Image (cartoon, rainbow, N blue to C red):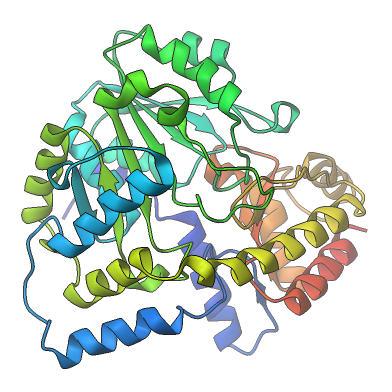
Length: 397
């Protein structure tokens, strides 16, 4: 039986595939350090777990409204008002089974065959494939290390056509950790204001993983005039170490949010009732639980950037947020290829070499639309990071 063209057009999530492969090798007894998974290594804060347990004890285990329980939607509205300065109503908010489902539903709700989706690269692995599932065309704009992995206004202007329907911006970025300044966002906003047919999706999932201590802003803070055609995407996974709870949310124009709700009603229906209670507690509770996690990420970030820049063939710049490092390995790849250590001068070959020769799992940059780089997550212990980077240095020397 032939599979659909839709599923044949996309690939398995590379980050999940790397993590699964590292897990299989560990199960076989190999000494593997996995730096692929993008999830905090901290436990979910106790008060959030306690709220979930209480929900179970109270029998809160039935279907909920498709778009989320009223308490959680109100907490999201209040969070966006208090922390971001945005005034939404509950009918302009939807809760999904993770941020990924919200993005998936958004794409299916607004994209038609032939529409173009503008995506700066390096990009989160799923943007382009989700666009393909919606039968749209990803338009990838290369933004290398030379420009801090950030899109420039002239690049955005050059990429927009009459077919452009959706523009993705992700700050802090996965995989690079780059963060746009208010001035940079304003400059991009000025371009978008000239093209009223373009919808904007701002993915703020790493908002609270702030490494530089600079107040968070997104493109709506810089250009409020885009409010009527912008969808804000966020969730509780990264800030509260709740990846497995699968709660994300979106806020935007009511007609788009309603369309996303219709799609969700025909797919997963409501997110897990217990997870919604936990997410509400996370948003409404003491935000001090975020502080020790971010402090640890800052320490690890400083270590890995310094350490990578000590390894010949690698170049790594500081990140402003998230918990990733994205070193430029093009010189190292060329050297390994010339010495016959890898058969092809690609980041995929480099990743295979690191895994097989020294047992370190990284994600090739090509998975994020950036050949010649690789991503590590430093959401793991300092001991793991020290050992992993020593092994990488050994493999490249």
